[in-house]
Image (cartoon, rainbow, N blue to C red; front, side, top):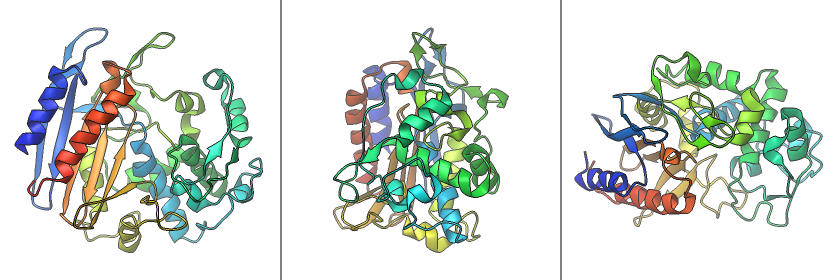
Length: 336
């Protein structure tokens, strides 16, 4: 394990930024794994198991929903240029396309009062009543609604809910050992997230409030996964298995390209596209509950990081700063 990375994670635990973590550094020839700290601190401290099942929050977008959408595109059931209103007629802004959603360039504006108190049908109706602003296609603005709509588009095309689609078309073909949208049936220890005033300890159900309401119709969150799952996803996306599973190798290569409308905003299909000083690209995605996944095709290395930071604090800005440093420690190392 990279010594600097190990020391930094222990520092985050000592500073009470996170209760604990699981981490894997993945290369074609080996996988280095480690477990640090505790499973949870609140409402009581518990030691970390060797293998936990985590609410991976927005990693759902790139592990589950993005592959489903790209598969529909490869099968010519959907186009990047298709208007969202073609599939979701309640969405009245005819400018918005599938590409905008995949690259977070939709610039959706508007406010929904009491959003987290709405029923599922009311929430969906309210979201589809919003519109895009004047930065449509010009600016990246990360928003869950993009992947909620992508999930609904996939449902319209196939007649199945997005969680079932991801299970049948991604999780099972890749033989992910633990990934599930139904953590209550898992044999692993499910890592709890926060202690909520209304919901109590959130354990075995999704943390994200919109997905908690929308259930199986949310393409933005809802997936629970283990470190082993993230390792297999990394190996698949870095093309270390020559078999073309789920997506073609050519489509996977397209993930390492700027896919924004003007190809100037460093965003791929779902993923944050970043650049090393020498110019080559690598992919990053994070989740609200704490996880990080980094894929570096040029260096042929990946980092999977799972933690339950919301069990300790809701200080999102502080954690984002600390997490960014962790990303940079890994991205700038020459060795794995």
